[in-house]
Amino acid sequence: MMNVFDTLMERGYIAQTTHEEEIRELLGKESVTFYIGFDPTADSLHVGHFVTMMFMAHMQRAGHRPIALVGGGTAMIGDPSGRTDMRQMLTKEGIEHNVSCIKKQLENFIDFSDGKAILENNADWLLDLNYVDFLREVGTHFSVNRMLTAECFKQRLEKGLSFLEFNYMLMQGYDFYVLNEKHNCIMQLGGNDQWSNMIAGMELIRRKTSKQAYAMTCALLTNSEGNKMGKTAKGAVWLDPEKTSPYEFYQYWRNVDDAEVEQCLRLLTFIPMDEVRRLSALEGAEINEAKKVLAFEVTKLVHGEEEAIKAEDATKALFGGSGDLDSMPTTELEKSLFEEGVGILSLLTQIGLTKSNGEARRLITQGGISIKNSQVSDPSIVITLDDFEDNRLIIRKGKKVYHQIKLV
Image (cartoon, rainbow, N blue to C red):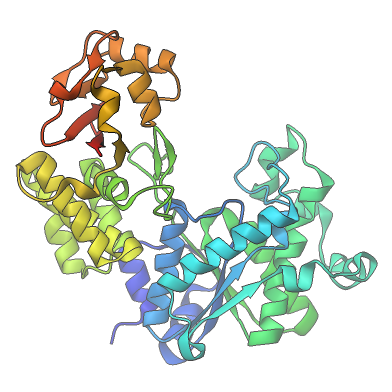
């Protein structure tokens, strides 16, 4: 059986390790408890988190025990990593709401039954800390000079780093120490932007207990220009179906650039590597077959097989003339509204394709709106019942965003 470390290396997950040979040997001979942290800065995880969730899932499938740590305490501070400005301060109530939402998403993805995984919230130990005791027990082990050389602080020093955020590294390091004491957690996994914080926790464990701990970071999901993937014109691609519908989620992966297909198949699916290589080698129009597999597999993992099939059927109906359109983003409107007609500008805004009539007008004049595959050129047109077929009207925004209006 292949060592999970080799699996992770082959699939391109591992970016940095603290002790490569030791970690590989350890993961091959015993069950290791490890953790990954998720800060609840929103009420849903997004595509950027999905890579670390897959990292965690591969480890669990190989017999290792994950701890999913939700940062209800650290979110009160805000992680300065990868930021050029200070994060918006969240209320305690807002953080608690976000934590509960994220917990549900993690529970749908990681098997927490029979102690196979642990769910923790660092608010349980961080919010009741005595500040002076914390400084004496933890702060004494951190060198300010060394902290200032960390990448997570460097880019903030030019614009200003608050003392509040400066504490974040101590708190994340303390998390690792607490989980080590409580669950014998000896390894932290996370995104490559967390390297400095992970080293801090590893060092804190060594200084306080003389025990060895380890860290591994995973590669970020980036496009061919090196920018983070998971963004659309509407914003982040969320894992919450209320924020990004399963159809929109499916379409995002169906439309990735050809150059990104292999990376996405490696990192975001469990498809065997031989098949990943075969699919990635397809060229020209055939690469679309690989994109169909990618879109279906990723949607199935996040939203379940039923929703993946619905999204696939809606796509077939839209582009192939067969299948079911009901999974496409849809707005139901009263039939009576269109007896006298509705202006295209107000209609686009009403169904959420644009934020204002002004934006709708600009989009139309730039050729960005099509109805029944015909480009709309006149922003003053009125949509009536005559424009509907079988009580449906499909509007396309740009090249890839489709929205259906159904009459009721």
